[in-house]
Length: 300
Image (cartoon, rainbow, N blue to C red; front, side, top):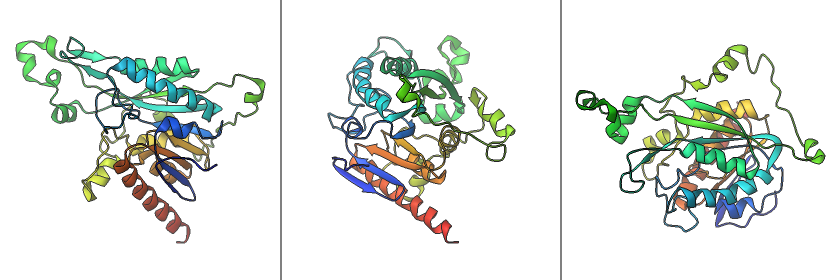
């Protein structure tokens, strides 16, 4: 890959992790150079990650986020190999009386679908990741999950909010692009029927909610914790389902490099971008540790 202009970078044999703005970095990458994208975008204005004007989380409302996100998706459409996938981790978002004028939910997952469709992607499928509502209630203190509401007015209760993985296909739009398509075949040995029956379910009930790189980092280093972690089991499953060994996986919102660690574990190469320097530094450490582990395993 050509030299990328950014704030900082760390390049290994199997990965490149850039500290910079994802739109500016992806604009410098060659077309059709990515075989799979897996990432968690900022959840509109739900979290404040940094004070940078380039941070998509620093938006006034959902419409402004969609406008900023659309600039990235135009680059993503160019980068992803025709016929291949983008797997995007999202959730619906709480509506607030002070901002939206009502208490309920915002259809953030629908906004993300429509943004990809405007950029030219095909909406391929949706995976629901089951989450324990008790854990959600304890973590968020969501009023709608409190049992005491049942005794007073159950119309105030709601069900828990799952995570979704939205899958989008980058179509081949010309004869030349059709020639760039590359299948992802499997054998009964590397992808048995029992695994496919699990994966084919629209609801993945077997994902360990706490199996995140956040959780592992927090045990050793509590200075930085990414707010929207994607479970490592989900990442591994997506890598193996939608890419071949040795191919390139991209995360434009790299965080602490959860997708990067998953890519290296699965024998893929990784390109990641993270704007916040503190997250990027933790991500570099995670990638270097995983690369060292992979290298050490080769000589055992």
